[in-house]
Length: 435
Image 1 (tube, one colour):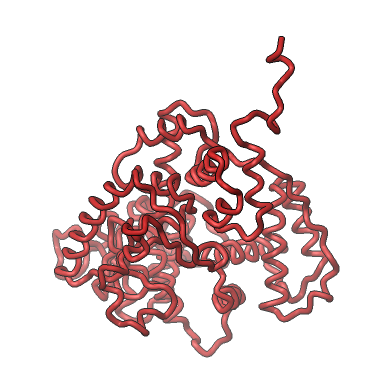
Image 2 (cartoon, helix red, strand yellow):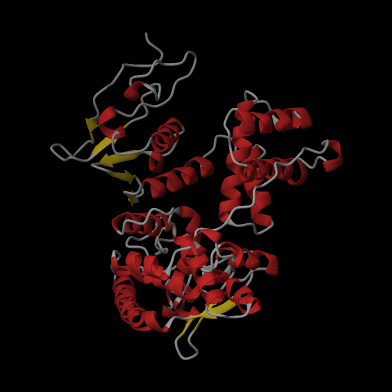
């Protein structure tokens, strides 16, 4: 008998649902590579998902679905599929890849075979990062680099390795993968954090590793005409977000994290909460965006009222504020200025809540708008922040004022924009122009 089971068994319909398109997949052991036409590795078996189901999900989500079925020990672990949706026995319905992945992480972690076993290494890394209140992006980057480091050395535990293995990994990144200096330094920072904060190995035990020298680069700055051309190609919420980015100089994450209470229309300012470096600051609210923001907030309020009528209306709150202020999650002032179109059901955020627009939505919209406007520069939402600072300096505003608006810790960072002002290279006129 084949230990891996049949190659591609057909799904069977659930009992009592004859003729229904709702299909339940039981834990039939099969290699996860079979639906993709790959050879099965020896001595490994996993639950099977048919190819008809796999086409709806990315490969990591399929692997997590298989892992959930492999650990299925209770009725609520059973997974059913209806088109591109995933239906759990508890009644939870998920149709988004990220939502499915988050829910499956919760199921697998909460129904592990041995809850008394010590936490895994990557879980310890996540805990160490969150204890220090690092950003979520930092957590994702550190976990990813530590995972790559372990896989590079054929899954050896980092406690059995040292500076030689770290240097070999960094050399491989620079020579074979040809990563940039900043990427190599980020990988080194993640590994040093692993040994110092997680494994409790003194830094002195790791010989100094030479950091790559980061090249000095100039920011991409758009002219006023180019900014106007991009805005003409945008509509709706994306256009309003770009107006705020260019009009106030906030970062994309800071803009999307704005809540209703952070907009002060009377004083014409925006309060940025927990920006880069966990710092608050105040910046300007552009008058050109005031009318659009007023109409937009009226639409958002109607959406919030509909959510409340349906039994939702919650919003994700920072840290443990939901325990300190139990009713804040449903209050209007705490709602995101730019909410997402769908309810977020990821378990890590608690009950079903409405999160803000995903950053990739704005990034894709800006890139497409630049293409339609025939702009050859590499345009991203962050280019609006660069353009904001450069145009203020060109208008004669003090560099210290611009520093405060941008939230830079060191004025040297702000001085970078002095080199890209619209006055030629270093303000020198070319001799060619005098011929």
